[in-house]
Picture 1: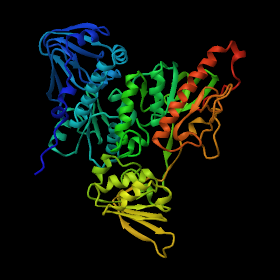
Picture 2 (picture 1 turned 135 degrees about the vertical axis):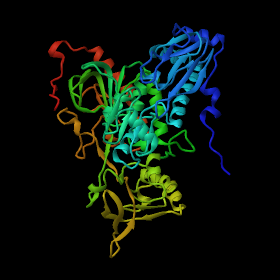
Picture 3 (picture 1 turned 45 degrees about the horizontal axis):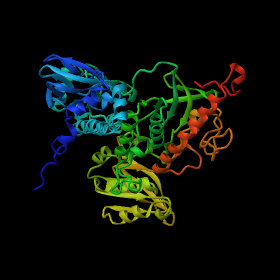
Picture 4 (picture 1 turned 30 degrees about the vertical axis):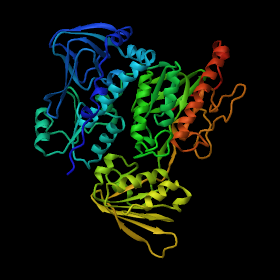
Length: 567
């Protein structure tokens, strides 16, 4: 008989709740300020941005979370020598829990800036604190509490979209099926019975009907206000592996950085069920976990992250002055820009696909899709490593997986994946084939038609879901009118080596660089994206040093490349 899996609180309690001794508390105290809370006083309120974390010198606090119907449930206590806080406090976002002083409390308060200084100045203490903050977020994700509540069916396209957004951005949430007693009780309590589903219950009083990703991001504090014309050293466009790595490297070397992405953290890599050929992870790691760790590093070094926030235009005033225009008509001024906007998934041009796009067609295979397809038949189209990883993942959840590839897998997929797929009893590989049509009713897929190149007749296979891993096109349309030179396929052309006046990975526009999948000639691998980021950071420093050595003087010093940003 198999019992339940132990929770993080049971297995890693000492790391979740580290206790600092008197000498360590004194070292921590150098970075913060003293605070006092009377018994019963609120230290942090769920849904409200709090001023960093506290390290308790005397007294104790109780940590509570709201369950689905808003009732407070105590989940933890912290006493003398312990830290109270979670990853939200590291990045200045609203608290996911409510904390109340059980008795009079004296503490050292560490603001976000104080915490960043401590993490850099006290490596060993910083490591213990960071581990605790990360594990506490993992505990909230494990429990599915502390975040918004989605009321809507699991197969509803909007529920899938909202759930994916929250999962990819490592934010806890709960999803409740409509028509259940608890769902009805919440809707009545929040006076939302007549709202169109899905309904999103935000921490606090806000209730949203069928919210956009931007409305959801504002609800959870992920998308914070931005002053129009805000100036930073570096803007990084794209929060995939390349953009995240670049942000971490640049911020760790003292540059102020804003990281933008129009969808979510992690890019296509973040949707990978398991990456097994990335150095340092011999047993593999999910893309979401790898990108989540990178995001924590970015927060540690003070990167400002804005998701979703779409860049729609770029203009260069001079080598060290650029304007990035956002979809909300605000602009950011930057001394340098790194384009890491990656690529957009290709859609399959087959009859009938439009009817199933929002319900049965998927472009990544995450645990959410695994649950959605549990016990069902699926078709997966693609022949690269991403398709292979998805096939292996889906085989553990689905009744049967049909993998259709245009060519032999040996030409496009790593040997270790081909061998693993061959050992799976519920995966059928069809090579040298193309999809012909999709059939089904009311947005629910039933069958997929395909034909192999040398076969006389087409064939039909049962499938309730279709997964497409057929490559991507560079996400560079937003650069039209910017002066950034593209190749014939739309990829960004960059310098291949440094020389006088030229910097590695710089585009045709001085001070604008490109890395990752959007760059012409790049290897479409997570490791290659991180390598690009490592190479571009010293190039940015060299460019800024050159600009400082030859400052512009009035209009005479400006480059004649100012371009109006398209609306």
